[in-house]
Amino acid sequence: MKQLTLAGWDGRLNNVLEIRPLSEEELQRDQSFRRTFSEARGRLMLFQILELNYKEWTTYHTAMLTPGKREGNDQLALDRLLFNFLASAYAVTEQFRVSYKRRFRRNAAKLKEYEDFISNFYANSWSCAFFADLRDYAQHCGLPTEGVHRHESRHRIEISITQESATLLRNYKRWTRSKLTQKHGTLDLIDMTQEYYHRLRRYYGQFVAKAFYPELESIDNFYGQLTEEVRAQRPAARMVFLTENLKRKEGSRINYKVTFVQPPNSVFEELGITKET
Image 1: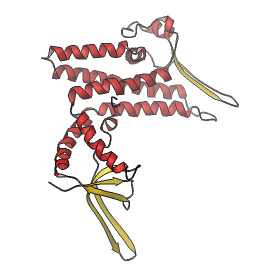
Image 2: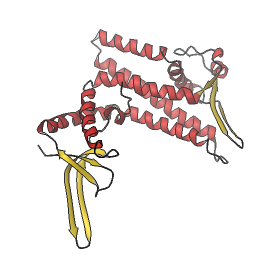
Image 3: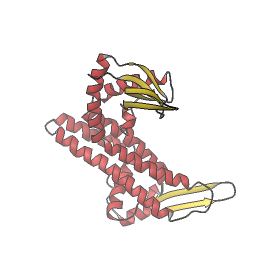
Image 4: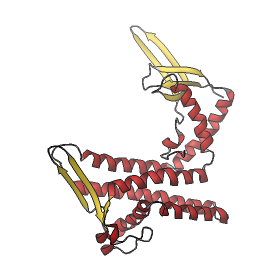
């Protein structure tokens, strides 16, 4: 098995901190764990897509708080970004619902476990239930935002991105998860989207990760300990495994040849999932 050296890398080829060779046991665990992590990353990539769409949404409306004249159509941009976010959230829940039922189709207890989980997932957060319904509304009836407002005064800038319960109910009747009524009034899409996103990452993400890849906890602990060992000596470095680190002087120049592999430093974060604490 090829020898690897634990190291810290700060992005510069001439500044790699070598720490120690990996033990034989660590090499064997890395070989096994990286295969599993690679498979999980491909399978759970929807959570990374969800994360990217959420970041684009928040980056855009945060930029609206910057002083100065706005260019372009904010409502159009926000509808597009929220539509993309809702679509990726739907893909997360639907694809894993189908995969879960296929994998455990002969296990009644596991199927009930999923039904209980998803029921509680929506029952414990009205925002989650509402956005699951809003995705259907946006797919079949209308755009996801109604009111986009920005007010800039001498001392402050205020924005709001909202929907009106009355409008939604007038145009669409199937609010089966959220049981939307006119009493819900004006809905703040910024705060509600944040709650939905974080609950998908933390609760839904943890559930499917444990169901499909229960060994991820052990993998996270293994790479996490190695990362801590590196950051004890170089706090901002990324933990890597060196395969080669050569420094060669040619005339007045110094050439560096560094090759390494990049195992995960924080397994759940790199999968787009919030680790359960």
